[in-house]
Length: 372
Image (cartoon, rainbow, N blue to C red; front, top):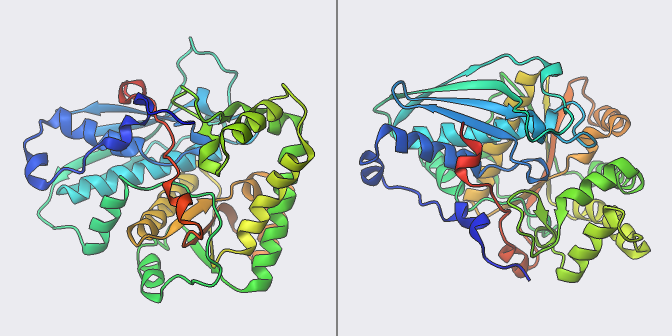
């Protein structure tokens, strides 16, 4: 049974009213925006970001903690950078909501600089990713942007079954399309059953690869944790709908401590496929290039879309396996009919079982641990 502890206190961060926010010092304001960024989703909940604040100039420097990049499932560092893109988008949305104009300067990091490195807790390996400069402005946020700002505090990845027969309302889809920056990414929406079935098959192949590849499965076991874990990073099994016994068994089996029960392996391999088969909406983000900046744009776009869904009570879940298993990535791109680089695949819909909505958020490191 999951026990409340300080690793979940980040989710008690308040959304300040404009009056409350105006009473904060410059340092407190920047720390608040970093806390919003810290609520962003990240691959395996690694929280690979680091922030440095400069209250004199109202600047936040965002870096990658290279020690957090996963060597098996994120060999290029793509998923970590997409995660940081989502964190940057949280800062932008939160700052604009509180009356700031936001300018984001890319550090133009090279792809070789964001790859995994041998873990060494004694060695600090920060890679500059972006600098965010804030300046006062008079424009009030739109209704949609206000909704996204509020959704930061409740958002979660919902790895559950969605209602196949309850489609996304047209006005939400229109809002999604209007918030996408088509200069930096291409957003594909897939709703037809035949293409959805093809994607489901690709997902099953990707999950089968993970479960049968010792390097992948051991890494997943390191991050798929027991429900009563005290770790501030990683994914407690409850987030996947696993009870205490199932979570402990999957963690130990994937880590290689005990044999993987056939039914557990089968359940893992088929769950993603079944979820995609039953979802009413699949979204795909592609980019013309495949640089670190493209990954940042993809992460920002995904989180903007995800928060829009959240603001309307619609859940979402990412499916990174198709992106990161190289052969399946290429086959999927061919099915999609694009020569662009596949960056993000996700599904969205209304959760079928109400109890799934009560799943806990993922834990978080203390804010001080991601500030430098």
